[in-house]
Amino acid sequence: MRGPLAWPKVPAMVDRRRLFDEAVLDAVTLFEQRWGSQLPDLEVAVEDVPPADPAPWEGSVVLGRLFPTQGSHRARLVVYRRPVESRAGDRTEVLAVITGVVFEQLASMLGLDPEDLS
Image (cartoon, rainbow, N blue to C red; front, side, top):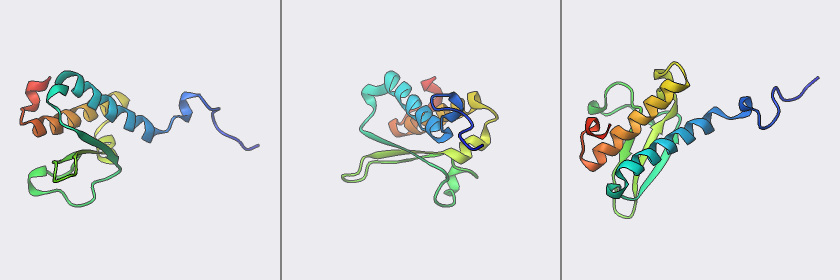
């Protein structure tokens, strides 16, 4: 017998990538609710892994990057799924790491200390 392991609308059928994407958007929304009046137009993206070796100031593994506004291009926040997931043991830890990465990157964009945001 062949068929799906779980029927549609069962939580087991929810794609992990989609859950991760939604968690990133939730963290950005949380940031905007607290600091939105200061936040410029921003593009948010999730990629599996960083495209290149980290810059010397980024440390050994990059969890996220913020690309500033350049010309007609909006600022872009990118969170890297695989490095974040490898740092966390369970779903709760993944959410905490995502929120930390988003807040850290957006704080740097606004010239704030990430510790001042919590």
